[in-house]
Length: 345
Image (cartoon, rainbow, N blue to C red; front, side):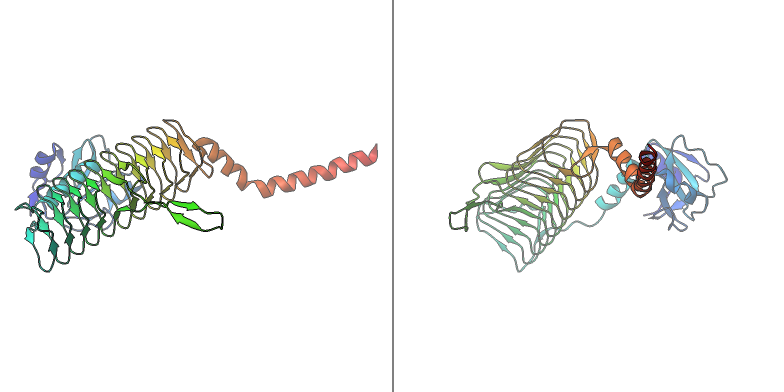
């Protein structure tokens, strides 16, 4: 689809600085864009690319002031990154939509497949599954008995949703995600062996949740593992049984959450963070990558490290660690001077 800079600016509520008639027919990163491309500048560390980019138009903040001439047309908006997301979603929505049931696949006789739904080849839809409108189930997906799928749910290839789990509206599960596998529950025996504890709960994903590729969310021992509205989980995350994740929390790849931990709303959690089990984490925290959270944590904190400490304190610790060798030499020299002084007494 081709669109002029002026038309695009009108679409997103922006203003044009430059050639308003330049035609845009593609999207690209600012350092890779060519003629006809729209790109964006949101992170200041990429500012130098705006003076060399070959893009036809660049989304910039309304208050952006170039320090030298820019050949591309500037489209000024309040938030370039949010505007780009809006445009990309618009492009995606115009892609052809799949409908119908491909063969071979299995859909239990009691399942009603809405006319606008899609079931890909080699998918399995168990007894008692309830499907909302416009559900998209891609090839090789398994949906167990009694699962509920809300409206506009997308299950990409290889997703597994075990029996009884509930998936809210507009949830997206990327390839290989597993929802409702058994929690890691075993009772130690006197002879050193372990007996499996039946995991009879479910998983509930509320509306607008996205689960990354190969992320696993275990079913509860009893009750439910709950991922609340708007949560976004990256790839390769482990969520154990009876965990609860609050609204609009986001987690980067390889986070691990042990059983029965409760995480509040609005948290931003970096990659490879580990949470101990049976703890409570408050709201609106920022937790840096590779942090370890061994105990309860309040709200509105910025922490990093293992065990995690205040981010400013951690930065100071790192600065001191870089000087450890120098400080060791200084201490050794001071000891020598002290020994000499003691010898003169």
